[in-house]
Structure formats: C-alpha cells, structure tokens
Length: 123
Image (cartoon, rainbow, N blue to C red; front, side, top):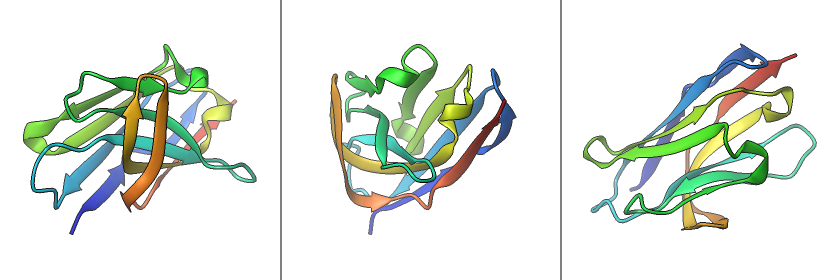
C-alpha cells in the first residue's frame, strides 16, 4: 500500500523559508512522479510543483517560480519542496501527492495523498 507522509509546515513571516518533506513508502520501484498541491481557505486546490520519476522534469505554478525548488532523494524515498521568499498568499495546506508531471503541468492527484501540512505566512 502506497503511503505519503507530509511534514515541515509551520508559521513563518513574509520573506522567510520553509522546507516541506514527503516520505514515500509502498512503491515497488522509484518510477513515480511526486509533487505538491495546496488548498487555501475558500479556494480551489491548485498544483504547486512536481518532479518526474527521473528527476529530469519539473513543474512550478507561475506564482512560485523562482521561489520554490522541488527535489527528490530516491535512495531515501523522500521528496522536498524548498520554499523561499514566502508570501502571505502562499498560506495553505500543502499535500504531497502522486500524479502526472510535465514541464508545464501537474495533473492529479492520483492515488495516494499525504495528510497535509499547514503553511502559514504572516505579513
């Protein structure tokens, strides 16, 4: 059974940084895309970032380009989302998920979700 576990959220002032982590278990191989969606209060869920199985393709939604960086450590079955220069509009619950990742899209989520981690950015 595939399981994803989010961690790393918290409260930070605008301009600060956080690193989200996603621990993955249950896959029989490393051939899976991993990424994050987020959902703010009263708003629809939106894809934030993803990284392909090989790590060669990444996607970032326009509002986080240049500020967020996604990475993965296949040996540890971990994925990370480094979030810098955080803004109040980044406040949301962030969910680690699997899906389909392209350079201009992240479709999903499919299958497993993490439990979500709250990111709150104060102004």
